[in-house]
Length: 398
Ligand SMILES: *Cc1c(COP(=O)(O)O)cnc(C)c1O
Ligand code: SF4
Image (cartoon, rainbow, N blue to C red):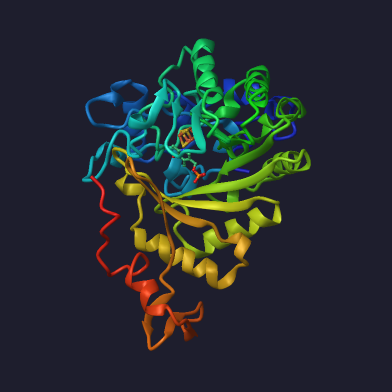
């Protein structure tokens, strides 16, 4: 218990109160210096971020914050601790590399209201807040999060404009609530949103995209569960990183949601030195399915400014998926996705197809053995869209 002297005990009423956790977040350089033996590079980067010089041209704009709960999962002494790497800044964050952008997903061009991104015909992304309980150094919306520090809530009139847009577009079946952190909102606001979406007949699914259960599981109160009651299907996409996040508090929060009929899935950013080991990912997937969370996506880290120290080669992601396919059941293997600016998600999978010859498709299985399957139309199939070596006439963009 490295933090026993710094934090109240885990069974104390304060510790279990999510508002206490929010109020007592580590934000100032002194907070971090008190709780961690900081490395030189962490100390410099924290001072920079907290001093507000962090938004100079091209550099990351991310604020810093950690809930005491999440900080207590990190090593006090080891700055290479996986959760520390992902959440405490270091000077590498100021280094801008080729292929990095402020808006790596190109969301701005698909914006239809100040907080609605409509890219795919049947679903919209609703950015309901800019606030988060913790700020991840790899945040794909680093250009937006934490910017309205004293203005916690997005004005109701903006929400209403977004609801009106959804109401007027019957092709939309699913609304993704993201941010920032949608569960950073109070119960009343969440209930208002659910009520507004419930009243739109063409909406079938309300999906949250949230890191809160991992970093502030205390937020998943019986009151929140009541606020989430809906006639629509509620899906909860949990942002997870590491097996260490499966604490008794987190497991209880996930259990509460699952028992309320909320469908749990997870999206996992792949990060160098955090979770880019096959065994770490295997453990994480096993823990997920065991606790009724369906692994959905592993995301290639989005190229925001200053993210090169956290990004792995794409080949590493493929290697990990291949290892998962070889050892876990199908429902424990997520899709591996590269989100390409302005173009959308590109699911990648290890190549199992080798060639088509004399009516047979040739494959390679999870043990590395070759196998073949007879298909009278084999040549046509892979000569066109599915042959990775053929030139695509229809797929060129821009
Ligand atoms: C990722 C994303 C979605 C959701 O896509 P799924 O593949 O259904 O998870 C919707 N809108 C935007 C803009 C997105 O980036
Ligand atoms: S919780 Fe999500 S939105 Fe907030 S900083 Fe982390 S990645 Fe970004």
